[in-house]
Image (cartoon, rainbow, N blue to C red; front, side, top):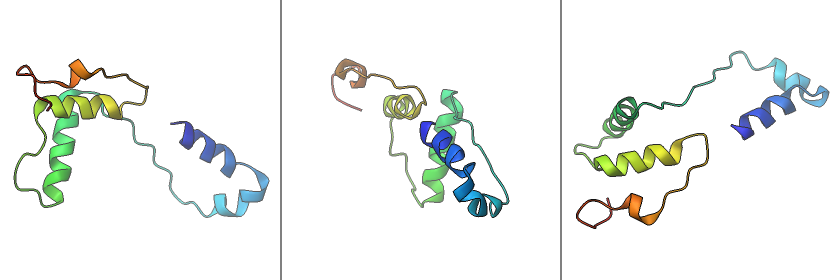
Length: 88
């Protein structure tokens, strides 16, 4: 998010006016914060990439979602483990 803000601020400066005038469309995609929608998005992307089977477990999907959030999150080792003690 900080990078996006920096880019927008840079494009508003006079030396970049020519480049800024060539941008015809601007799209800002909001993060997906619902677990079910996030899982569907990742699974759809994997299918589009040609994956025929599920590669990420539910706990792995949760860890992936937490790591993709815009706010920094901290994961401890016990949060990454399954109930049987193995990692996702």
